[in-house]
Amino acid sequence: MANGESPSLASYKSKFLSDCVSAEALKFGTFTLKSKRISPYFFNAGLFHSAKLARSISAAYASTLASANIEFDVLFGPAYKGIPLAALTVDKLGGIDPKYENISYSFNRKEAKDHGEGGNIVGASLTGKRIVIIDDVITAGTAIREAIEIIKREGGTLVGILVAFDRLEKTPSANDDDGQPRPSAIGEVRRQYGIPVMAILTLDDVVEYLRGIGTEDDIKRLEEYRTKYKASD
Image: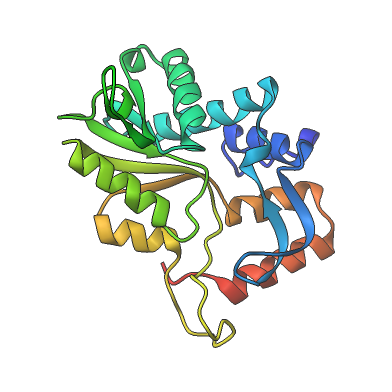
């Protein structure tokens, strides 16, 4: 199929996946992760720094939010990676539907400013607002929990979290090959806070997309990895 598009994936997912592969933000091979797992693929959203790719990732974030049917007022981008993602996505949302024209973005400073307007928050106030956190990934969940505490402290209401990629794999353990079911980091956040945690792409999307462009060996390795480390949620 042209450009590796999959008829079973939403068009924005196929487009984003194609751009990820072209930019080598999504690569297939053998990679050692921080968890020491040996993964047949690697996703790096940090490579979306050119104008073309920034447009691609922000359009994919905006399309995912628009399809989620969540009412919100502010996109909150945790420092530092979330800052450009929030700003770019707000711009794209305004072009999707007029109802998003008044959506704002906001982000936190790592250190409070003690002059001028002061405080930790830059952009829209979070007080009394419905907030969606936007970030690249959730690995251990520590950064997301810090962002949630900021929103709570500022008087906002968290209504959702949006990330670029969900590996759908269980959290690591001391005996990682014990075969025991465990939730994913995203699953733990979802259950702890009772809010939707969305992703532009998941490992399932990657496997489906690879059926159109990959080798049988690539597909087999991804499917075996998914089976071995699949989360319980």
